[in-house]
Image 1 (cartoon, one colour):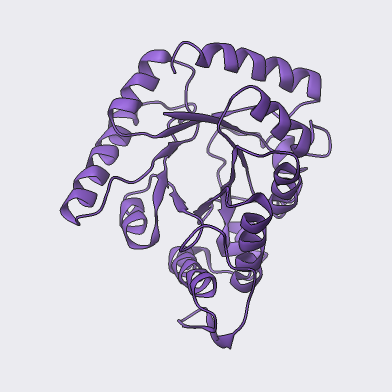
Image 2: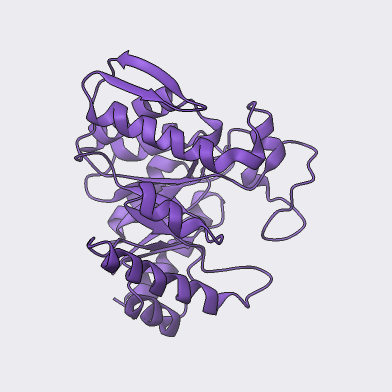
Length: 285
């Protein structure tokens, strides 16, 4: 099992390049950076983790810029979008960004994707929140075409283009692994249709009663891949509790990587938290 961290890189926190170096130096395996293009000052969409929206959701750096900075100063760790709100991004531009990052990093990108939770945020990009998952699928399929075809075309309801050239192609073949985020009832349908892996959220604050559902979904994904004759999918958990018993339970359920959240903060604070995490991980590796 591998281990990594996720943190909003912001204008008040430790920068993504310094964070990436610290993660690699401590023997961790991955750094994921979240994605929000902006945050509506007024919204009705409920925030999953409480009433108040933390400032790191408002003051975060661009995800791809942060990951590029991290790629430039590291050699080993995986670099993940955690998660990329594809429904708010042009697929031709995003395909170029992902391929460029994979090229510059020597093939170390994990492309975590999702439909998001903030209706107002998506609508500011001109999207229909109620149809976001079809839009997500079409944009993912369109990017797959761009990454794998020298002269790419795609025809859908929301995405249409014919005979385009786009380089670089990703180092990883056929493309960086696509990790589908979420734990809604139809999430595993999406994982099986266009994903190469799954990112479930394990922590569910303040309500924690869905643990059994998460583990049933883990078992169901194993059954589905077996039935389809596919190899086991890599599974990366977000919101992983610092609990050895839970980590062992996740390992037994087929989880291949656990990601731990770090609070956005200045370097001294983040480094202390990273050191504590590294010491904890010595007990579970």
